[in-house]
Length: 300
Image (cartoon, rainbow, N blue to C red; front, side, top):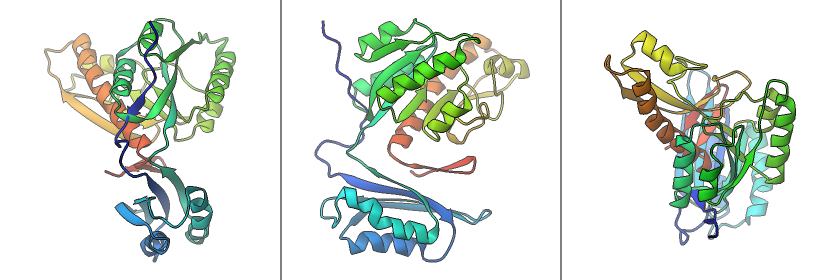
């Protein structure tokens, strides 16, 4: 039997919908920002279909997401960035341009727990995300059959404290060969080096089985049970050099009680983890997240 083909993950746009361009930008708040961006699109014949913005009043910082149709736009997509650059330079913007009809290439890193991997691969098969899951990588061989069932390439890269640098070098080579753009840690129980994290800055999404910043680190459900909490949670965040402290993308909670033991907390937590990770991946791939400092703005 031939393996099932890799399909798009979280595909939100039907094939007949017109392609769009999206600008995500941030900079110091100043007069004329909104007008400059809107005028740029208008002057080239663009039709804005979504526009959202936020000003952090405390930090005097401006963030915006603007999406417009490419059909009828006066610049081809190769020309847009260079045409917009003078505006970005004038306002000293941090900005990113993306296109709705381009699928990102994703790698999923896992260890032994399968629930988040199953969920992402199932969503992929159902066509729920605009991305290609190109490879699954694990430091254990246990989940190879799951990747095979979904027709996704699997690589087993074992690691010990003495081989960590060599294993990560092999991982980097593999991801570079696959031209991976986004790395999803679906309960990958290894710490990545600062150099690896920097090479995928704001492009490594982790799911932590706790409502961060509470109960960071190992065994958060044990910690939660010891404290007798009434609510447990899960947090998806971008990975940074500081463990479990990167910008938060998505969180959710579930109520628990004194009747729940650690096993019950973990079972309920797994449901949260799959949902929270899927939402975070979805919002990243739809270019709805702007990172500034150690915070995010996630546009609806």
